[in-house]
Image (tube, rainbow, N blue to C red):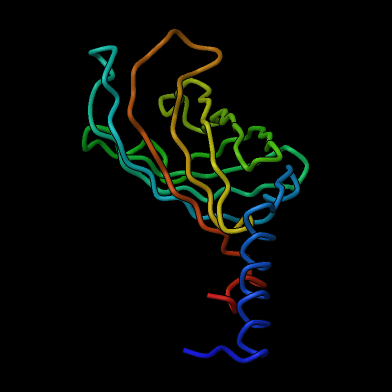
Length: 162
């Protein structure tokens, strides 16, 4: 098969575009705006807290390392005490698009409180998607869990792209 000059040029541009994307760097500013999260998993220990967890959250990242969130999480089939529990937190994104975030619940209903959580995160698709895993709590006794989530940016300006 004979390739023309324009075919070679197109292949070169596609290759360069892939390299540029692969070398993209992230920072706290990569996360900004509203993200919808779907979370699922299980608390394994301690026994009194063990059981399946599923929920949704709306998280707002400010681009500077702070976040606010509301969530609705069902634990062991039990609905939360309040429909939408507020939380605040912080995050830090490394240049390789890995990082962490903390979520500190601020319930209006005291029975809906839970410990501050630390999550490790990977930022994907140029900040349009976040994948997380709960790694524990920086302020509470250790517990064992397998809880993951995927968040997608949903800002008004981004809707037209999807």
